Length: 116
Image 1 (cartoon, rainbow, N blue to C red):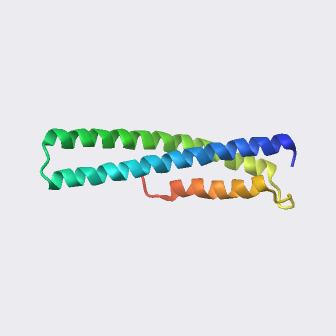
Image 2: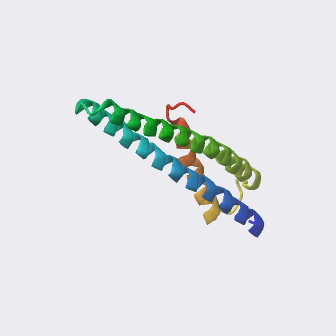
C-alpha cells in the first residue's frame, strides 16, 4: 500500500474512532441524567431542580445528535476511501484490519434505534 494512502486511511479511521468514543460518552451521560431525573421525581425534589436536570438532558441529547451526524459523515468518508483503495488481493496490513474494525464499530452506532 502506498505510504500516502496508508496515511490517509489511518487519518480517516482515527477520526471515526474519536467520534465513536465521543458519541458513546454522550450516550452514557444521557443515561446518567435520565437516571438522576427518575430519582429526583421519586424523591419529590423541587420542580426547579428537576427542570434543570431536564435542560441538561436536552443539551446532552442535542450534542449527541450533532456528534452522531458528524460521525455519519466521517464514517461515509472512511467507507468510501476504504472501498477506493482496498482490493481482494490486497495485502492485509494493520491499516486494513483496523479500518475494517472501526467501520464495523462506527456502523453499530447507526444500527441502534435512535432518532438522528
